[in-house]
Length: 146
Ligand code: DQA
Image (cartoon, protein in one colour):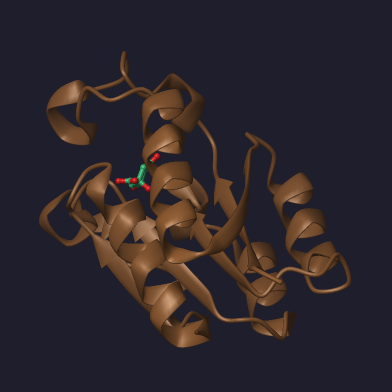
């Protein structure tokens, strides 16, 4: 049976394609998701893709992921990367590998984006390859799991 990966897109990522395209790229979230689905098929992984603008919903989703049979999580916590102790604690508590991704290179941007509260409790972080960050993150999870 294929391993199942949960992809979580955080706040405002529903606006990709129209939002600061010089920073995040021109691809819409639907286009990124299609590329993820194609890559997952080629890796022999099943993926479920989910987006939320709400911190508590993201905490709940992470908490339910292991009992729901997921084997790993790919997450772009978006703005919550820099603020959310609650999401960090949810990631620390979940007994699954979690990979953090960002479209932009957060380390090359405003200082408040340099710090991720989530990255220290993840397996690793991929940042700066626009939509490609998600594909690299999925590849990393595949290598960890297969
Ligand atoms: C982001 C970077 C965050 O700083 C920002 O708040 C986002 C998107 C990225 O993917 O580059 O919303 O996570």
